[in-house]
Length: 431
Image 1 (spheres, rainbow, N blue to C red):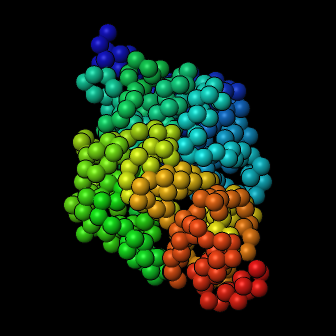
Image 2: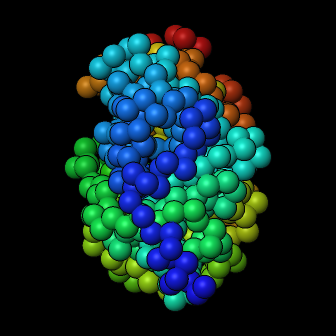
Image 3: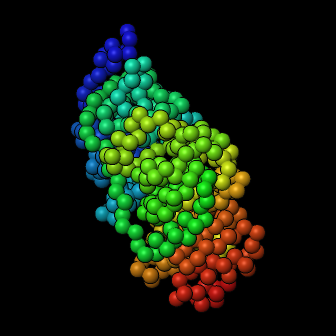
Protein backbone atom coordinates (compact mmCIF):
# COMPACT_ATOMS: atom_id res chain seq x y z
CA UNK A 1 0.00 0.00 0.00
CA UNK A 2 1.11 3.57 -0.59
CA UNK A 3 1.14 6.16 2.20
CA UNK A 4 -2.41 7.33 1.57
CA UNK A 5 -3.74 3.79 1.73
CA UNK A 6 -1.87 3.10 4.97
CA UNK A 7 -3.26 6.34 6.39
CA UNK A 8 -6.83 5.41 5.46
CA UNK A 9 -6.45 1.94 6.96
CA UNK A 10 -5.26 3.36 10.28
CA UNK A 11 -7.73 6.25 10.53
CA UNK A 12 -10.15 5.70 13.39
CA UNK A 13 -11.97 7.39 16.27
CA UNK A 14 -10.21 8.43 19.46
CA UNK A 15 -12.26 5.97 21.51
CA UNK A 16 -11.25 3.09 19.24
CA UNK A 17 -7.61 4.18 19.08
CA UNK A 18 -7.04 4.20 22.85
CA UNK A 19 -8.24 0.62 23.21
CA UNK A 20 -4.66 -0.28 22.23
CA UNK A 21 -3.37 1.24 25.50
CA UNK A 22 -3.24 -1.30 28.32
CA UNK A 23 -3.58 -0.93 32.06
CA UNK A 24 -0.36 -1.05 34.08
CA UNK A 25 1.66 0.51 31.27
CA UNK A 26 3.91 3.49 30.60
CA UNK A 27 2.73 6.20 28.22
CA UNK A 28 4.44 9.39 27.03
CA UNK A 29 2.26 12.38 26.24
CA UNK A 30 3.21 14.99 23.66
CA UNK A 31 4.55 18.14 25.26
CA UNK A 32 2.67 21.45 25.49
CA UNK A 33 1.20 22.22 22.03
CA UNK A 34 1.53 18.54 21.12
CA UNK A 35 -1.00 17.41 23.73
CA UNK A 36 -3.66 15.51 21.73
CA UNK A 37 -7.03 16.68 23.13
CA UNK A 38 -9.30 14.07 21.53
CA UNK A 39 -7.04 11.17 22.51
CA UNK A 40 -6.59 12.44 26.07
CA UNK A 41 -10.35 12.83 26.45
CA UNK A 42 -10.83 9.25 25.26
CA UNK A 43 -8.24 8.01 27.77
CA UNK A 44 -10.08 9.87 30.53
CA UNK A 45 -13.34 8.21 29.51
CA UNK A 46 -11.72 4.79 29.77
CA UNK A 47 -10.37 5.63 33.22
CA UNK A 48 -13.81 6.85 34.31
CA UNK A 49 -15.36 3.60 33.12
CA UNK A 50 -12.80 1.58 35.04
CA UNK A 51 -11.30 -0.11 31.97
CA UNK A 52 -7.95 1.67 32.31
CA UNK A 53 -5.95 1.52 35.55
CA UNK A 54 -2.39 2.10 36.71
CA UNK A 55 -1.45 4.11 33.63
CA UNK A 56 1.84 5.90 34.23
CA UNK A 57 1.97 9.06 32.12
CA UNK A 58 5.38 10.62 31.44
CA UNK A 59 5.44 14.28 30.39
CA UNK A 60 6.74 17.81 30.79
CA UNK A 61 4.85 21.11 30.85
CA UNK A 62 1.25 19.87 30.87
CA UNK A 63 -1.43 22.21 29.57
CA UNK A 64 -5.21 22.65 29.54
CA UNK A 65 -6.01 19.55 27.50
CA UNK A 66 -4.31 17.25 30.01
CA UNK A 67 -5.56 19.25 32.98
CA UNK A 68 -9.21 18.81 32.00
CA UNK A 69 -8.88 15.12 31.09
CA UNK A 70 -6.29 12.64 32.34
CA UNK A 71 -4.85 14.93 35.05
CA UNK A 72 -8.17 15.58 36.76
CA UNK A 73 -8.11 15.08 40.51
CA UNK A 74 -10.76 12.35 40.43
CA UNK A 75 -8.65 10.23 38.06
CA UNK A 76 -5.33 10.34 39.90
CA UNK A 77 -6.00 6.98 41.53
CA UNK A 78 -6.09 5.37 38.06
CA UNK A 79 -3.79 7.60 36.01
CA UNK A 80 -0.51 8.31 37.77
CA UNK A 81 1.44 11.37 36.58
CA UNK A 82 5.19 10.86 36.14
CA UNK A 83 5.87 14.57 35.90
CA UNK A 84 9.24 15.96 34.81
CA UNK A 85 8.12 19.60 35.12
CA UNK A 86 5.63 20.91 37.67
CA UNK A 87 3.53 23.53 35.94
CA UNK A 88 0.31 25.41 36.39
CA UNK A 89 -1.86 22.30 36.08
CA UNK A 90 -0.04 20.47 38.87
CA UNK A 91 0.17 23.55 41.10
CA UNK A 92 -3.58 24.07 40.73
CA UNK A 93 -4.25 20.46 41.70
CA UNK A 94 -2.15 20.78 44.84
CA UNK A 95 -3.64 24.16 45.74
CA UNK A 96 -7.19 22.80 45.47
CA UNK A 97 -6.30 19.63 47.40
CA UNK A 98 -2.91 19.32 49.15
CA UNK A 99 -3.39 15.54 49.24
CA UNK A 100 -3.01 15.52 45.45
CA UNK A 101 0.70 16.24 45.85
CA UNK A 102 1.28 12.67 47.02
CA UNK A 103 -0.36 11.38 43.82
CA UNK A 104 1.89 13.35 41.46
CA UNK A 105 5.27 11.67 41.07
CA UNK A 106 7.76 14.41 40.26
CA UNK A 107 10.84 13.00 38.54
CA UNK A 108 13.90 15.31 38.67
CA UNK A 109 15.54 15.38 35.25
CA UNK A 110 17.24 17.96 33.07
CA UNK A 111 15.19 18.72 29.98
CA UNK A 112 18.10 17.53 27.85
CA UNK A 113 18.05 14.21 29.69
CA UNK A 114 14.37 13.50 29.11
CA UNK A 115 14.79 11.73 25.72
CA UNK A 116 17.33 9.31 27.16
CA UNK A 117 15.16 8.73 30.22
CA UNK A 118 12.15 7.84 28.07
CA UNK A 119 14.12 5.85 25.52
CA UNK A 120 16.42 3.85 27.82
CA UNK A 121 14.85 3.77 31.28
CA UNK A 122 11.07 3.66 30.84
CA UNK A 123 10.49 1.01 28.16
CA UNK A 124 7.57 3.06 26.85
CA UNK A 125 4.50 1.06 25.95
CA UNK A 126 2.79 3.93 24.16
CA UNK A 127 3.05 7.52 22.99
CA UNK A 128 0.19 9.88 22.11
CA UNK A 129 0.78 13.21 20.41
CA UNK A 130 -0.51 15.83 17.99
CA UNK A 131 1.22 16.06 14.62
CA UNK A 132 0.89 18.04 11.41
CA UNK A 133 -0.94 16.55 8.40
CA UNK A 134 0.96 13.91 6.44
CA UNK A 135 3.03 14.99 3.46
CA UNK A 136 3.10 13.28 0.07
CA UNK A 137 5.87 10.93 1.21
CA UNK A 138 3.88 9.75 4.23
CA UNK A 139 5.66 11.76 6.93
CA UNK A 140 4.18 13.70 9.82
CA UNK A 141 5.99 16.75 11.23
CA UNK A 142 6.33 17.32 14.97
CA UNK A 143 5.74 21.03 14.36
CA UNK A 144 5.73 22.94 17.62
CA UNK A 145 6.96 20.06 19.79
CA UNK A 146 10.02 18.08 18.83
CA UNK A 147 11.65 18.12 22.32
CA UNK A 148 11.30 14.65 23.94
CA UNK A 149 8.09 14.01 21.98
CA UNK A 150 9.84 12.94 18.79
CA UNK A 151 12.13 10.53 20.64
CA UNK A 152 9.20 9.00 22.54
CA UNK A 153 7.26 8.59 19.28
CA UNK A 154 10.16 6.73 17.69
CA UNK A 155 10.80 4.37 20.61
CA UNK A 156 7.34 3.57 22.03
CA UNK A 157 5.79 0.21 21.12
CA UNK A 158 2.44 1.79 20.21
CA UNK A 159 2.12 5.29 18.72
CA UNK A 160 -1.22 7.05 18.31
CA UNK A 161 -1.22 10.39 16.52
CA UNK A 162 -3.83 13.11 16.43
CA UNK A 163 -3.59 14.91 13.10
CA UNK A 164 -4.44 18.59 13.35
CA UNK A 165 -4.22 20.87 10.29
CA UNK A 166 -3.39 23.77 12.61
CA UNK A 167 -0.11 22.13 13.67
CA UNK A 168 2.63 23.77 11.59
CA UNK A 169 4.79 21.66 9.35
CA UNK A 170 8.44 22.35 10.14
CA UNK A 171 11.52 20.56 8.82
CA UNK A 172 13.10 18.24 11.35
CA UNK A 173 15.80 15.60 11.51
CA UNK A 174 13.57 12.60 12.22
CA UNK A 175 9.97 12.97 10.96
CA UNK A 176 7.44 10.26 11.80
CA UNK A 177 6.29 7.97 8.97
CA UNK A 178 2.73 6.74 8.73
CA UNK A 179 3.98 3.15 8.77
CA UNK A 180 5.32 3.74 12.31
CA UNK A 181 1.97 4.62 13.88
CA UNK A 182 -0.68 2.22 15.13
CA UNK A 183 -3.68 4.53 14.80
CA UNK A 184 -4.58 7.94 13.42
CA UNK A 185 -7.20 10.30 14.82
CA UNK A 186 -8.17 13.48 13.00
CA UNK A 187 -9.12 16.55 15.01
CA UNK A 188 -9.25 20.03 13.48
CA UNK A 189 -9.21 22.37 16.48
CA UNK A 190 -7.23 25.53 17.28
CA UNK A 191 -3.87 24.92 18.88
CA UNK A 192 -3.28 26.11 22.41
CA UNK A 193 -2.54 29.83 22.39
CA UNK A 194 -0.16 31.61 24.74
CA UNK A 195 -0.23 35.36 25.12
CA UNK A 196 2.36 37.70 26.57
CA UNK A 197 1.66 39.12 30.02
CA UNK A 198 2.18 42.86 30.60
CA UNK A 199 5.69 43.74 31.75
CA UNK A 200 6.21 45.25 35.19
CA UNK A 201 8.55 48.26 35.50
CA UNK A 202 11.16 45.99 37.11
CA UNK A 203 11.08 43.69 34.09
CA UNK A 204 11.50 46.61 31.71
CA UNK A 205 14.52 47.82 33.68
CA UNK A 206 16.06 44.34 33.62
CA UNK A 207 15.33 43.97 29.90
CA UNK A 208 17.05 47.28 29.16
CA UNK A 209 20.20 46.13 30.95
CA UNK A 210 20.25 42.80 29.15
CA UNK A 211 19.61 44.37 25.75
CA UNK A 212 22.70 46.54 26.20
CA UNK A 213 24.74 43.34 26.57
CA UNK A 214 23.64 41.89 23.21
CA UNK A 215 25.68 42.87 20.17
CA UNK A 216 25.27 42.32 16.44
CA UNK A 217 26.01 38.72 15.49
CA UNK A 218 24.93 37.21 18.81
CA UNK A 219 23.29 33.77 18.82
CA UNK A 220 20.26 33.84 21.09
CA UNK A 221 18.54 31.54 23.56
CA UNK A 222 15.59 33.10 25.35
CA UNK A 223 13.51 31.55 28.10
CA UNK A 224 9.79 31.82 28.59
CA UNK A 225 7.89 34.86 29.88
CA UNK A 226 7.48 38.58 29.51
CA UNK A 227 11.10 39.42 30.36
CA UNK A 228 12.65 37.69 27.32
CA UNK A 229 9.93 39.23 25.17
CA UNK A 230 10.85 42.68 26.52
CA UNK A 231 14.50 42.00 25.68
CA UNK A 232 13.58 41.00 22.12
CA UNK A 233 11.68 44.24 21.57
CA UNK A 234 14.79 46.21 22.49
CA UNK A 235 17.17 44.48 20.09
CA UNK A 236 15.19 44.69 16.85
CA UNK A 237 17.81 47.09 15.48
CA UNK A 238 20.59 44.49 15.83
CA UNK A 239 21.80 42.71 12.74
CA UNK A 240 23.00 39.20 11.87
CA UNK A 241 21.58 37.65 15.02
CA UNK A 242 21.24 33.88 15.18
CA UNK A 243 18.72 31.72 17.02
CA UNK A 244 19.58 28.42 18.72
CA UNK A 245 16.98 28.15 21.43
CA UNK A 246 15.10 25.66 23.53
CA UNK A 247 11.85 27.62 23.16
CA UNK A 248 10.77 29.54 20.07
CA UNK A 249 8.30 32.37 20.73
CA UNK A 250 6.43 35.14 18.90
CA UNK A 251 8.93 37.62 20.38
CA UNK A 252 11.75 35.82 18.60
CA UNK A 253 9.68 35.71 15.43
CA UNK A 254 9.42 39.47 15.82
CA UNK A 255 13.20 39.70 15.56
CA UNK A 256 13.02 37.80 12.28
CA UNK A 257 10.30 40.12 10.96
CA UNK A 258 12.41 43.14 11.96
CA UNK A 259 15.36 41.91 9.92
CA UNK A 260 17.53 41.39 12.99
CA UNK A 261 17.99 37.65 12.43
CA UNK A 262 19.98 36.22 9.53
CA UNK A 263 21.50 33.11 11.15
CA UNK A 264 24.34 33.44 8.64
CA UNK A 265 27.08 33.49 11.28
CA UNK A 266 26.03 30.28 13.02
CA UNK A 267 28.22 27.19 12.87
CA UNK A 268 25.23 24.89 13.42
CA UNK A 269 22.52 24.94 10.74
CA UNK A 270 23.50 28.31 9.26
CA UNK A 271 20.61 30.19 7.73
CA UNK A 272 18.05 28.52 10.02
CA UNK A 273 16.62 29.26 13.45
CA UNK A 274 16.92 26.10 15.53
CA UNK A 275 14.51 25.23 18.34
CA UNK A 276 13.13 22.21 20.17
CA UNK A 277 9.61 23.41 21.06
CA UNK A 278 7.47 26.44 20.35
CA UNK A 279 4.60 28.23 22.10
CA UNK A 280 2.65 31.18 20.74
CA UNK A 281 -0.59 32.19 19.08
CA UNK A 282 -2.37 31.37 15.82
CA UNK A 283 -0.50 33.95 13.65
CA UNK A 284 2.78 32.62 15.05
CA UNK A 285 1.91 29.03 14.17
CA UNK A 286 0.93 30.13 10.66
CA UNK A 287 4.30 31.87 10.33
CA UNK A 288 6.01 28.64 11.36
CA UNK A 289 4.14 26.49 8.86
CA UNK A 290 6.38 25.55 5.94
CA UNK A 291 8.92 28.23 6.94
CA UNK A 292 12.26 27.22 5.35
CA UNK A 293 14.15 29.35 7.89
CA UNK A 294 13.13 27.06 10.79
CA UNK A 295 14.51 23.71 11.87
CA UNK A 296 13.47 21.64 14.87
CA UNK A 297 15.56 19.03 16.67
CA UNK A 298 15.14 16.82 19.73
CA UNK A 299 16.00 18.49 23.02
CA UNK A 300 19.01 16.28 23.68
CA UNK A 301 20.56 17.81 20.56
CA UNK A 302 19.40 21.42 20.91
CA UNK A 303 20.29 21.58 24.62
CA UNK A 304 23.60 19.75 24.36
CA UNK A 305 26.16 22.16 25.84
CA UNK A 306 28.83 21.17 23.34
CA UNK A 307 26.43 21.72 20.43
CA UNK A 308 25.40 25.12 21.80
CA UNK A 309 29.05 26.15 22.24
CA UNK A 310 29.86 25.46 18.58
CA UNK A 311 28.24 28.81 17.83
CA UNK A 312 30.12 32.00 18.67
CA UNK A 313 28.67 34.80 20.81
CA UNK A 314 25.86 32.73 22.33
CA UNK A 315 23.75 34.80 24.70
CA UNK A 316 21.52 32.77 27.02
CA UNK A 317 18.80 34.56 28.99
CA UNK A 318 16.93 32.69 31.73
CA UNK A 319 15.03 33.47 34.93
CA UNK A 320 15.47 32.30 38.49
CA UNK A 321 13.59 32.35 41.79
CA UNK A 322 16.47 32.87 44.24
CA UNK A 323 20.18 33.65 44.19
CA UNK A 324 22.30 33.04 47.27
CA UNK A 325 25.23 35.23 48.26
CA UNK A 326 27.70 32.81 46.66
CA UNK A 327 25.90 32.94 43.31
CA UNK A 328 24.04 29.63 43.28
CA UNK A 329 20.53 29.77 41.78
CA UNK A 330 17.30 28.02 42.73
CA UNK A 331 15.04 28.28 39.70
CA UNK A 332 12.50 25.56 40.51
CA UNK A 333 11.44 25.44 44.18
CA UNK A 334 9.24 27.94 46.01
CA UNK A 335 7.01 28.06 49.05
CA UNK A 336 8.24 24.71 50.33
CA UNK A 337 7.20 22.90 47.14
CA UNK A 338 8.50 21.98 43.73
CA UNK A 339 7.35 24.89 41.57
CA UNK A 340 8.66 23.97 38.12
CA UNK A 341 11.85 22.03 37.24
CA UNK A 342 15.45 22.49 36.20
CA UNK A 343 14.46 22.59 32.54
CA UNK A 344 17.33 23.48 30.24
CA UNK A 345 18.78 26.34 32.25
CA UNK A 346 22.07 24.69 33.19
CA UNK A 347 22.53 23.30 29.69
CA UNK A 348 22.47 26.79 28.21
CA UNK A 349 24.45 28.36 31.04
CA UNK A 350 27.27 25.94 30.27
CA UNK A 351 26.81 26.06 26.51
CA UNK A 352 26.85 29.86 26.41
CA UNK A 353 29.94 30.11 28.58
CA UNK A 354 31.71 27.56 26.37
CA UNK A 355 30.91 29.65 23.31
CA UNK A 356 33.60 31.99 22.02
CA UNK A 357 32.49 35.44 23.15
CA UNK A 358 29.39 33.97 24.79
CA UNK A 359 27.68 34.90 28.02
CA UNK A 360 24.91 33.44 30.11
CA UNK A 361 22.54 35.75 31.93
CA UNK A 362 20.27 34.75 34.79
CA UNK A 363 17.74 37.42 35.66
CA UNK A 364 15.15 38.04 38.35
CA UNK A 365 13.35 40.87 40.06
CA UNK A 366 15.09 41.68 43.31
CA UNK A 367 11.94 40.98 45.36
CA UNK A 368 8.83 38.80 45.40
CA UNK A 369 5.43 38.91 47.10
CA UNK A 370 4.87 42.59 46.52
CA UNK A 371 8.34 43.58 47.62
CA UNK A 372 8.16 41.82 50.99
CA UNK A 373 10.63 39.02 50.19
CA UNK A 374 14.15 39.34 48.82
CA UNK A 375 15.17 37.06 45.97
CA UNK A 376 18.81 37.59 46.91
CA UNK A 377 19.17 35.39 49.99
CA UNK A 378 21.89 34.10 52.33
CA UNK A 379 20.86 30.49 51.64
CA UNK A 380 18.59 28.93 49.06
CA UNK A 381 15.23 27.49 50.12
CA UNK A 382 15.40 24.68 47.58
CA UNK A 383 17.72 22.71 45.31
CA UNK A 384 20.55 24.28 43.36
CA UNK A 385 19.45 24.53 39.72
CA UNK A 386 22.55 26.35 38.52
CA UNK A 387 25.66 25.90 40.70
CA UNK A 388 27.80 28.82 41.76
CA UNK A 389 30.66 27.38 39.68
CA UNK A 390 28.65 27.89 36.48
CA UNK A 391 26.88 31.22 37.05
CA UNK A 392 28.15 34.02 34.84
CA UNK A 393 25.97 37.17 34.88
CA UNK A 394 23.18 37.94 37.38
CA UNK A 395 20.85 40.81 36.53
CA UNK A 396 18.12 42.52 38.58
CA UNK A 397 16.46 45.91 38.15
CA UNK A 398 19.25 47.32 40.35
CA UNK A 399 22.17 46.26 38.19
CA UNK A 400 24.19 43.53 36.54
CA UNK A 401 27.08 41.57 38.03
CA UNK A 402 29.64 39.30 36.37
CA UNK A 403 30.51 36.65 38.95
CA UNK A 404 33.20 34.91 36.92
CA UNK A 405 36.59 35.08 38.63
CA UNK A 406 35.15 36.66 41.75
CA UNK A 407 35.89 35.40 45.25
CA UNK A 408 33.08 34.50 47.65
CA UNK A 409 33.54 37.84 49.42
CA UNK A 410 33.46 39.74 46.14
CA UNK A 411 30.41 37.82 44.95
CA UNK A 412 28.50 38.59 48.13
CA UNK A 413 29.25 42.31 47.81
CA UNK A 414 28.14 42.36 44.17
CA UNK A 415 24.95 40.42 44.88
CA UNK A 416 24.01 42.59 47.85
CA UNK A 417 24.29 45.51 45.44
CA UNK A 418 21.72 43.82 43.18
CA UNK A 419 19.27 43.36 46.06
CA UNK A 420 16.48 45.73 46.95
CA UNK A 421 17.95 48.49 49.19
CA UNK A 422 15.53 47.55 51.98
CA UNK A 423 17.23 44.16 52.36
CA UNK A 424 20.88 45.05 51.91
CA UNK A 425 21.77 45.63 55.57
CA UNK A 426 20.08 42.36 56.55
CA UNK A 427 22.00 40.49 53.86
CA UNK A 428 25.29 42.07 54.91
CA UNK A 429 24.73 40.89 58.49
CA UNK A 430 24.17 37.35 57.27
CA UNK A 431 27.71 37.08 55.89
